[in-house]
Image 1 (cartoon, helix red, strand yellow):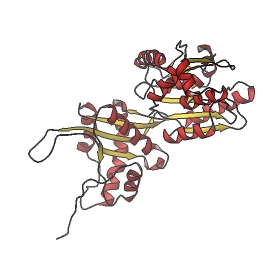
Image 2: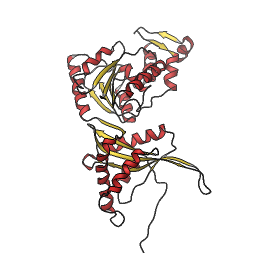
Image 3: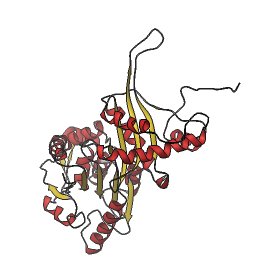
Image 4: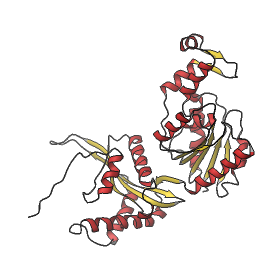
Length: 357
């Protein structure tokens, strides 16, 4: 199966605009999504149905979306349907935009609530139902994302898009003197250069494939060596066949999974996770949690965001599967890992102590 690019146009656009991206992604199938929805509640049904069907037909699905099309994607999809996203002038805070439009038209909330809909002199219709919906349905987005923003975007402020990028760990590029609508020759050249640059650095986090397990074992061997160096009195040097086989057992188990972070389709980080269900006992309450048993990043590519992306994926999957918490363990000699996990929000909840005799 080929990797798939789905292009989602903005207001007034069309699926035919997807043709522009075929030369930029020659090794992908590129299609346009000609959606019909005008509201986020209708878009949610239409987008989920379309992307769920396309996801079955491809190995990896990448989204390119413009303006309101990006907003509909943000409010409808998640990382089970999209592996990576490129947003061009996205509407990332619809409530803020609607409130701004109300100010431009001198419309109060009370007035809008009473009249339900009010036409503006700039071609948009303000809707009380629309405003109430976006307030009740905030965006939840865990897909690796790159954003292209024009400095003079008249719909979304730099403060708004920057806040979104920070909150959702997205990469933000600002085109000086750019507009909301990228259409001039200069703007399209900037867009093309941005996409070429970003796709070479593109990282995807997903469940591993069987063919990738030998590479995962290479990464596990690096982690094993680190432990043998840190505590040679506990860990053995080498990476025997039994240790290599464990990742295959996790891959085949219904109670575990192997996750990889890939750059240019090469795994550069991994996690082996377990799904823990412990019944209530005389001593402890029942426990239901997501445990990261093994975790590592290729030492050549550390401090590149790979570990952070892996953790974000694990946390999102744990929440999606209904687990109460995410746990992991770290050795005291590994100070850099302790700092990394602490920065990611992990806190100690149990401590093992030792004393030499």
